[in-house]
Image 1: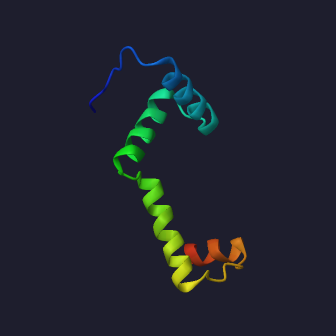
Image 2: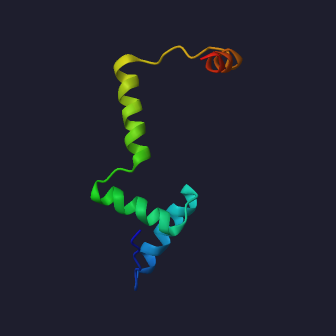
Image 3: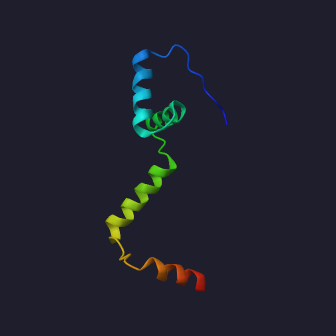
Length: 79
């Protein structure tokens, strides 16, 4: 995977990135990738999946998921 090193980053940019990384519980490198993807309009995989889930819920509503966990496990094992 390619890497990127940034030199002479303005202090205010670094502080903002560090603050956002801490709030999101990410490393500086992880946060920088997230910020770059957002700036370029490249949504991350997680955001794309969540968007699809929201669309499906808006179209068809939520299904009833009140099954007992034990019944679901048994049904899965019986397959």
